Length: 241
Image 1 (tube, rainbow, N blue to C red):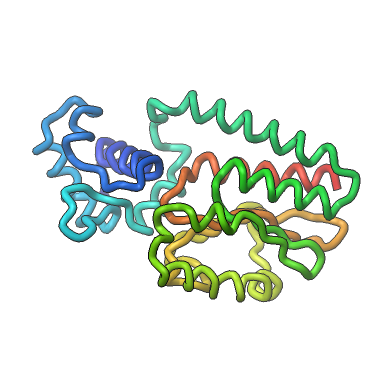
Image 2 (cartoon, one colour):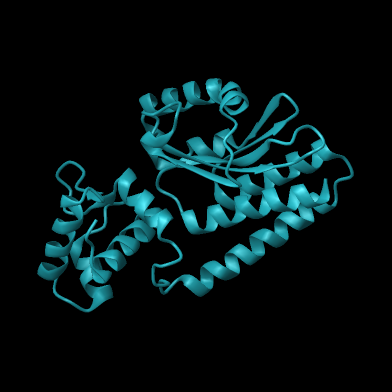
């Protein structure tokens, strides 16, 4: 895929702006940030749209990331130039990891430690938190998930509910093997039409060598922060349990 450095930066900015506002990002907003004309931004956005990385919803003048755009972003996080919010985000991640340590470190039992980590992820990300405890799937934060603007559509709520009904048996049978597993939108092996992302970390626990902790949220989210916190939660649980 041929994409210029400026196009990468524009895609990065669209994803970060959309994660914060849940509104399509327009050329005027980006032109101010990049110090170029709106026409220049529109030409770059047209190229990104041709590549399938962004899309124009309905008649909106703005653009939103596609599943492919999110995947490109996630795969290239290390190589993308840090945004103006990078330092703020770094501090936010540090506060989040500290909150996880406090919540989990106060627990004396493995099951309560795992639940504590899940509850902390819910508070820190606004997503649904989940973890396997033995043969059970612990879920928390369903209300937090459904208060996000994407889920004003009943169809999407039903699709997520169907996904959750099948998540525990899928985790048990598929047993994703990576330390950090990221399934974006249609990449989800179950609930392909639910338009959510599943980010889970595998860790060893007293219950299983393949326990999982993670979050389920809309495709519109701060992947850098969420991935960091889920990875940290998995590593921390493996160390202390």
